[in-house]
Amino acid sequence: MKTCDVDFAIVFPPTRYTLDNDLLTTEQRQFYEENGFLVIKNLVSHKDIDEFREVFEKVCKKELTAPGMVVMRDVAIAKSEYVPDQKAITKVQDFQELPGLFRYCSLPQILKYVECFIGPNIMSMHTMLINKPPDAGKKTSRHPMHQDLHYFPFRPADRIVCAWTAMERIDRSNGCLVVLPGTHKGELKQHDYPEWEGGVNKMYHGVRDYDPNIPRVHLTMEKGDTVFFHPILIHGSGMNKTAGFRKAISCHYASSDCDYIDVKGTTQENIEKEVIELALKRYGLESEIALKDAWMAKGRVVQGERNNL
Ligand SMILES: CC(C)CC(=O)SCCNC(=O)CCNC(=O)[C@H](O)C(C)(C)COP(=O)(O)OP(=O)(O)OC[C@H]1O[C@@H](n2cnc3c(N)ncnc32)[C@H](O)[C@@H]1OP(=O)(O)O
Ligand SMILES: Nc1ncnc2c1ncn2[C@@H]1O[C@H](COP(=O)(O)OP(=O)(O)OP(=O)(O)O)[C@@H](O)[C@H]1O
Ligand SMILES: O=C(O)CCC(=O)C(=O)O
Ligand SMILES: [Fe+2]
Ligand SMILES: [Mg+2]
Image 1 (spheres, rainbow, N blue to C red):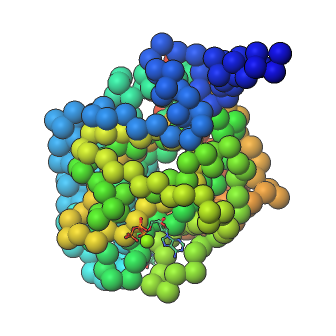
Image 2: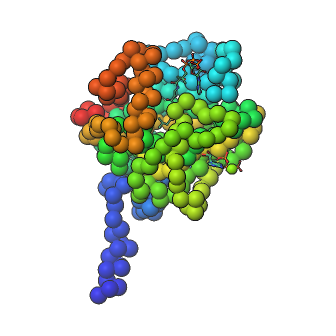
Image 3: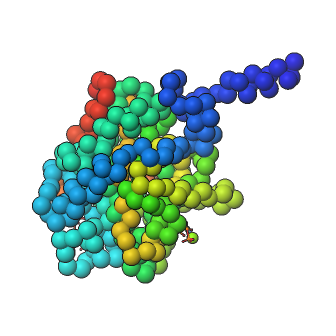
């Protein structure tokens, strides 16, 4: 009867990280279950991406702004004079009030995939356009290996997913995503600032220790290709060795049926502390209640109903 069990396992492998749907092929579904990520080629049109790029350029020139949006410079040039150009900017975060960029988060072809991972009640929780600069020679353009869940005070993790779209060809030369397949099955690990001689960008925490024997996979992607990945998947991105600014746009989605958690006494305490300090400086927000309120305020329903988040 042993063979019978084995056959059963092959036909009906356990599905924990995906939900029943009629979009993913069996192979795609199994791939995400086993690896914690899935690349869909050519999902976002070049026309849409070119529009996002134009909006981003206006943000850099300060012709466009929006409430809550964070514009970050690379740590290597953080203390130099601001030039109103994309060359000064490493990342734009929290663009939920800027329709020209936020449109990315509501693209129906993306939401169709997102639903396969987190279900029909979909909220955008965290938005970014990453403009990885040519490395200034200090390797600060790298993003250390990390798990995105470290930043998120809501659960369950399996009902959170990131969509990350290449806005141009991205490979090892300009700093592609590097993933450790299968690590989404593990736990959230302790994160700290990596000990890099050249400095590290604000809040770019890295996993303190991970198994160096897990093979790294470099995701080479073309313009419009989109990767969906689980928030416990260990990933990072490499140094940009080109003269161009490597662009990607992303959104973290969560099911509105997720719940906020208290991160006191967990490995997430250190990031909470940094976020609170920053909120205090910027907005005068103080308590943890206010931290949860900040997530509630920036989350947006993009499909279905708003329940807990
Ligand atoms: C899943 C997802 C969440 C994963 C991630 O995204 S991990 C990274 C998340 N990172 C963040 O959320 C950081 C977002 N960035 C910001 O909040 C801001 O850009 C800040 C870093 C606070 C800078 O704010 P800004 O308004 O530009 O203020 P200032 O130019 O006056 O600078 C204030 C002090 O911050 C320093 N600074 C600016 N940019 C960086 C940088 N990239 N890395 C490290 N330090 C930086 C700047 O030198 C200045 O320092 P002091 O003069 O106070 O010593
Ligand atoms: N020595 C290291 N220690 C810790 N993390 C590293 C180290 N080298 C690279 N990484 C991490 O691996 C990812 C890729 O970085 P890196 O810039 O080295 O690119 P790469 O993919 O190794 O390509 P190459 O080294 O060929 O340029 C990043 O998340 C980076 O932080
Ligand atoms: O370099 C990138 O675009 C990926 C960055 C990333 O993983 C993150 O901001 O969480
Ligand atoms: Fe990340
Ligand atoms: Mg390397």
